[in-house]
Image (tube, rainbow, N blue to C red):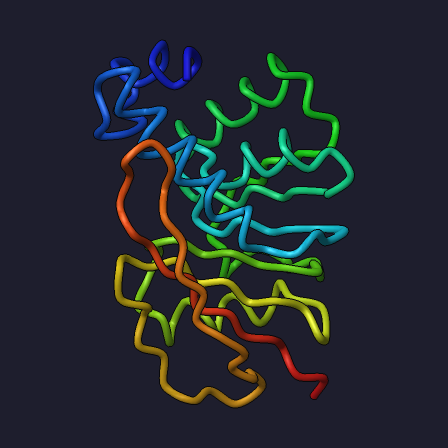
Length: 178
């Protein structure tokens, strides 16, 4: 929270301006999401912005290798600084667009608000290992995702952000072995 608060005025890291908003809307939201996701060896956070949910994932799951993929250079620099300052040996920021970088297979891939679900899933497929989880967080209602070749829908998981936070949902799919 302190890092986000220190960097935000310089590079418009997030729209959340108060420490309370950063904790509630970013940190606790990411923690609540991660509580719904099974443990996995690796996680790719596509379009990670200020590093959410990827940075909290690296903190809360030290055995999980987390890749933060961000196309905006200033936010990527923030992620690199956060990884250094927090000593997160299991987190690796990458600069570039998820659809353009050379994808590396991960056990799970999350994409939060980077594109419409269909487009996001196509990008996510490249980053998911066969059988890997595909995670699309949404609001109270789960994202509407049409059938996509190579993706098996598994579930919609509801969850609530703690401390009076909003109701959320998670669309969960799995990459088929093509």
